[in-house]
Length: 331
Ligand code: UT7
Image (cartoon, rainbow, N blue to C red):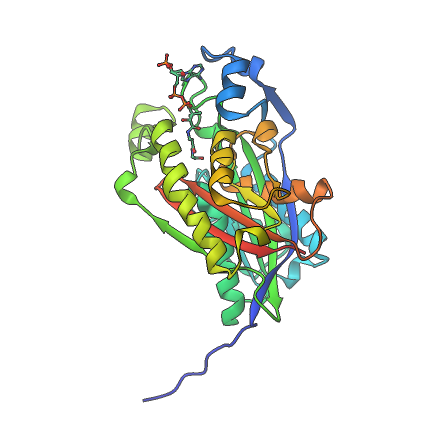
């Protein structure tokens, strides 16, 4: 038997920088209600959303993720050439190939970094962060750029009263690098394909092409809501335990921005400390799928709410159904 040499990485990984991009156009509830039979009051009460951001033609998925990636690299004080791997979490890349990550690596000047996309809907950022942590600890990559971006409006039926008010666009990114101790806790993740129809596309791409209409997102909101309040709360609790922490040791809570009422219910059940800082940017951004957690991180930095070394609890959940929760130490 021949022994092969193998790489060994760092004892832990660490988030080194954070960045985001939010589209210019702000669409408030009054403007949205021109499309659907709804009201500002109903949307605020049921979701917390006051306004959302929709990308314009020049704010492509590549343009948005590139700006978020550049900002994360600048925050980390790193050059694009320092990056060994680029991961992009997205479900709204409309071309099958090449991966958006490959285009992004070239756009940012990260080539010849390894680059691939991760398809895990609103849990995509957590999935990609877990991969980045594993790559750094295994010594497969030293610095990984994790980017999450979605243009949900490309797949939104603006006449669908059940979804049109929720979905929006954006991108966020973090740089992950080696550390002398764990700075990204174990991920608690998984999937439940038996619920694949709960959030789905109305048509597969081949049928959409044949019919000449886009495959819109459709959702049984109440089922997702109930699942989030039971199973996803448990996932979040387990993520705290997996990191070896107690709820009172969490400084910041950045849940996927699906609904302010889901965040409220999670807070009631998780027993986080009274002064925990909680992301509530759904009020200004709507639901931006994979990018909602890194957008939340960037907003916390922008608002001066992150003390270096703060512990941040994150959980993403969505179409699949899929989920991913983890705790990270922030720079
Ligand atoms: O990111 C992926 C994960 N996605 C989620 O986590 C979404 C989770 N689900 C939700 O956030 C909520 O289910 C929604 C915000 C989507 C919907 O809120 P809800 O409280 O579950 O509303 P509902 O579907 O139970 O409808 C309640 C009422 C109904 O009227 P009746 O039967 O009580 O008279 C609906 O017809 O609200 C009515 N309704 C609306 N009214 C005004 C439904 N949609 C609207 C609307 N505007 N857009």
